[in-house]
Image (cartoon, rainbow over all chains, first blue to last red; front, side, top):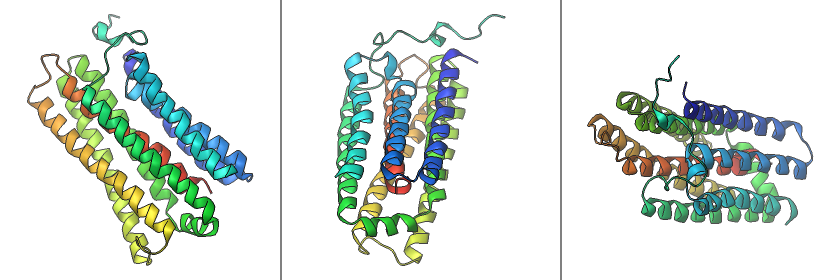
Length: 86
Length: 199
């Protein structure tokens, strides 16, 4: 199996794991703020994986990588803040 | 054992390669991501004004359907990524196979989504039921339209791959389509927890 295929497969497995973990967190963690924070973190990690590995931006010009990574960090963070603190 | 794949197997350094696909497609992707960001933040904000309504609304949704949709889109995106790897390695037939698999996974998403819509409508919920369902149907249907467009693009990529259109090494069209599909997946990654998971 090639290096790129291994990276893509690991990314896929981590995406599935984080998705299932998010569901488990929503069931087990009763504190809304903690639950939201953990799920937002999971979303950010999943987003990074898609941007870097699936979209292949880890080797693209830095400005585009930072733009997309900024999106997957800032947007979920804003949503988390709005849901918990506003 | 000799490595059967050419040097394209090795991951290049960060920032050393061009943007995958057309610049215009990336502008379109940024535009779409911005629109969805506005929808998501609006949903989260509105939820604060109607917590009981949104709580009841989320409880009426089918979490399992949402999970199946998520797994289907993640897997479809994975297959598209593998298709791109195989294409760069010169394996056109494998590329076609993974594109076909990506389309099948996307069909699972479509089928599940339409089933979910039918269940909700049969239960008496629709766009005009209340603010939650207006936002739910609007945002998820808007995303579904992007999935349908993405499937058309994937189908065209599959057709072109089978024609040998990318054999010359010019993959820009393929990469543009793949990037769009990954964007559709990325949007759902954010949408699913906001609408289905976070209580």
